[in-house]
Length: 170
Image (cartoon, rainbow, N blue to C red):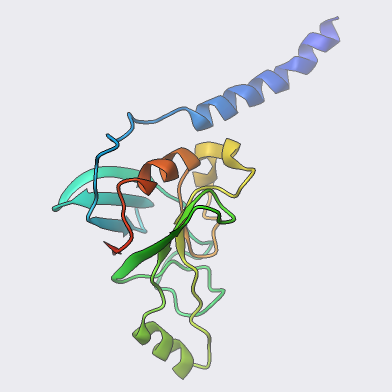
């Protein structure tokens, strides 16, 4: 009987960790909130949604595995730097929802091609991989994307509503 109790200790510990990883960190934004700009601070690992220069909410993020410096070529695991647009959304992506960043610009493409490379693309703000939402904020322990900007599924659901297609992202 004592062995059974001790066997349950790791299960209880894991349950506590998963519960903590998914516990809401803030009250949700009102559903009628609208953003007009998104700013990513790579060094701080933060995504900020704004309206008329005022911060509406700041979210901790994970980036690509080589986050420092601007994205230059496909596969470099960097997040683009510069001014882009969130030009469309995908509710059925490989991760929980995604907002597409308009990378690569004409200048990005020209620079990459001059060096003989493909600039890459499909940079998104997204939640966690489908089926792994239970990981919650534990995903922030390391930079794991291929250059995208990752938040928890709860955070992605919150960002999805106030950030319309066409929103500038820096």
